[in-house]
Image (cartoon, rainbow over all chains, first blue to last red):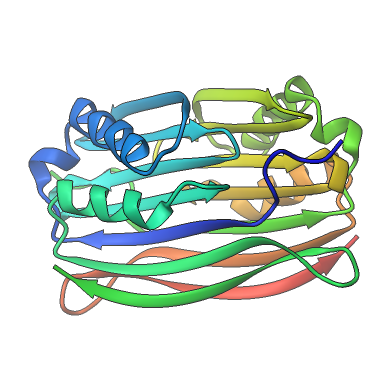
Length: 135
Length: 135
């Protein structure tokens, strides 16, 4: 059987700084932003789970067919660790931009990992590109 | 309030090749392996969700307090994309080794991302180290 979606995917890894503590400490707001981001980037949500942990952080993920988006926040430091990993037709950059705008990020350290690249010997590898963004 | 767990964490990104198609196509087996890996590496599981997608792949994640482990598989190609991201006391390398052994991986392309590193100017960054493993 041929896979419906190829192995190649884009995984964007973000350290977001200067974010809104109010948003970062609210699991309901974060879940809404993530579901909207998934919709915005044409991803089909299969499951999601978000929760608050002591004293104020939020942790959670949205699972998409061959991919996921996740967040772990430290509201008191304005910091969030975000991952957006997608295969197929959806646009991970759009989801990342959407999320960063909604959480009020001022700075982002971003690495884009191109995953599932097949090598001549039949093994799979990834490549990485890193940059900074200011908002 | 001081965060219970610091921002620094280790995120291991793996492209696993030559894996067992039987294991990679079974969401129940994958979920069992992931929960055992989390226990083995002293992580506290908060939620998990695994499902099969057409024609044979498995997608899913286990959410831990400030971290997550996830997998997306292409059994017909023996390929799996795995992420293990942890903060605090747990040992992500142990979880990765456990998973790779149980899915029968023959080769792994691995990047270790050190996340949530605070810079002098108060922003957060990550650093990356990449290597290959043969089994």
